[in-house]
Length: 198
Image (cartoon, rainbow, N blue to C red; front, top):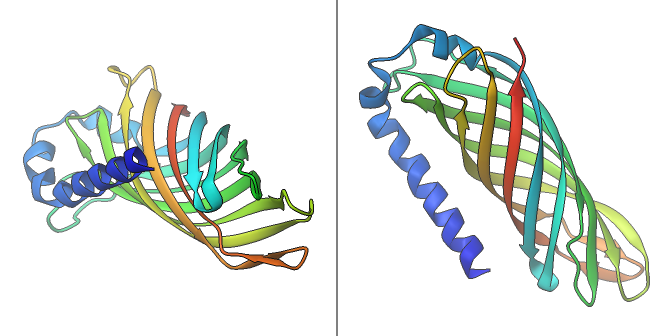
């Protein structure tokens, strides 16, 4: 948990610094790179989850989204806006609770640095399938997700591959599992690879 919190704090600090430095890093750039961030993308990821009720475990899944680089945003030379949907299978487990699978839709505002580095925030809505390990009842719960991430793209726009690291915190609504009330939340660190379609 400590490492997850430190990762989240570092991500938040990096995202706080983006508006202050976007003008510096975004002034000189290759227009081909800016164009390379626009359009649909898809990829796969692995993750580690730690949360309430001592949930711990590895998981993985896939995602798809669309990115756009708008112009004339005050204070940010090379802004980025993305939308994304993803689905994960989860092996997070404890003595009392298991997280089986999770879906998330999110908005991803950010900025491009040095042509091939993207920093972004994450604000979304998630739904997860939880199972009680006490009575084997299961139920879906929804909640808001927040976080941030960094993507590094390949070094030539003609090879539109990328790798990314994310931290996401989700606070789910209270859910009833066979008469047992639970208020789950989780922290996830995700490592993914993706392809930008052209």
